[in-house]
Image (tube, rainbow, N blue to C red; front, side, top):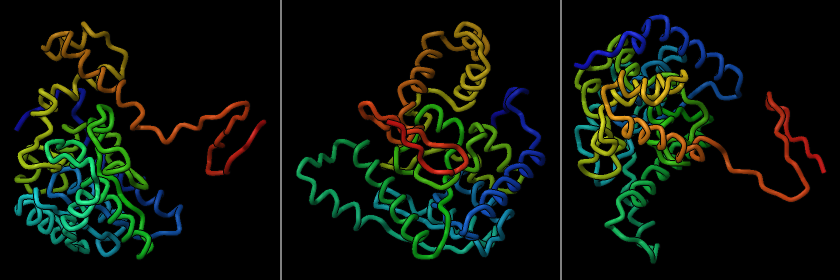
Length: 280
């Protein structure tokens, strides 16, 4: 078990109460008292499920295991274990027939392009979650954490397609701290993070660094430290710091909605859900 630097260590009970309160307040402000989320057997979705259960009651939280042919059986078993532990509704929907049919009708499909195929799987999961949400009057809970969101390690309109993201203020190492506090099984907390889009995929092998290092870089960069200062603190080269931060810049579009483009017409979205104000 890795330890986090002091400045990345959180007051777990205080943070838990804040997130639970935020979930309650957000859901209260909508017409939908129930939620649905994808349960992958990983630490992020397990923690999001536990917090939603505390905020809304487990009977109001549906956890869906959404395996495909690349999903290890242990992921489904761990998802079911979390659902039982936190008294969630639980169901399994195998998305393999859906993604297989998509690939069959795509003339440009290339099985060696793992990223494109993986994104199809992620977007299929989003589609299934929203089908349940539409049919049952639920909100979709996103399970991404701050580290993944900042470096763009998610599928646009896939796992980031959600109504709210309760873990968006927590770096990955902080997610693990809070997960231990709420008694997520150690087997889940300590397992290597993976989007599960293809067999053998792990986040840290793709990033080339541990999340402890990535989180340290992101934390200090968000607080205005220089590349050299971050490099010395994280004990990595300035080039590697720049590589991480370049991911943040390159994936900015993934954290935004569609760009409103036009000519001599400005579209201004007013805050507070008031609607659109059009100016010519």
